[in-house]
Image (cartoon, rainbow, N blue to C red):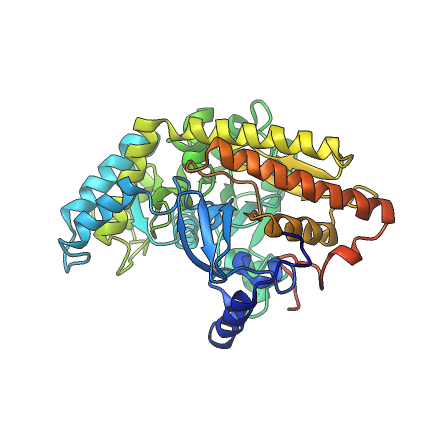
Length: 441
């Protein structure tokens, strides 16, 4: 279908309904219709495996499913079976369920570098709990975050550092400082400048590039030397790097780590894990001041914990991480070959670990371009590929990859025309997509 013929009237009407009752029209800014070409933001009806259908009846091969949370594919039978079993037994009680013990034991067996774990519903709460715990344990107020990583929490200590800082006191934001990924000297300089003030170092252990040799171990040594807590945000790296996270793959043990996304295959569950000595400060078996670590009515819903256990079993028994890597390698190779064949190999760039691929769209001067991203997304959508990223799920098959590469090739042909014209505007169909973090709507 050509982009001129591709229309989403029902999705457009549904987006209007969404904006009328939900600020932003979605429950995650990254899902907003401003992230898609004008009037081409599909509203989803349902999904199965690696495919989703919009309310207009179009089927798409989907990437980045559920913002990387649905790594096994939609409606995965093993996960659904576990969830249904618990739904029939009740989901929430006035006292802990035995499922909580089973889920915690299963998690700690999967991530043996952690000694205790507490579950909650979203990544922001888990990561903020890690920061609160680090501040309590060290008696320090400053938080050092990796400035090269895009997101850690919706809470003030992080969001205050972004362009969307309205409503957050400057006094809160001033307590958060940033260090660059991969640069131990700069991090040590920061810790020395704020000597005895930094409670924790918070970072994703890996991102779109592999950690430099010795970097994570060096960061571990720096944290020890300066008396601060090392926190790994494993929301994305958990399971996609290995079942035991990046800490298991690279062999560097943080004091605390947070998991989510893939943990529930779309069901709401996340985790704060770490050393017993620290975690117990949020418990009942220590003599010091109590830390209000995590206390959530729905944090231990039995069906979500059952989903997490089923996900871990599937990953370990079926080799899901290896499958994600193999699928990603195949996709990356195909996209790069298609882009090169169309003469845009330097402009449509695939980056990241094979299980966590993203793409960059660069203009004539090889600068990141929202206009060219809009052109590219528009062509993908018309070809039946919903891909804000190229993050794969285990439900994809060879035919899906081949079809995706074919659609990418067609999109790259249009991309080449725009580059030759020196102006992508005729192919945008309206305003360009926008960055998530910006000051004005």
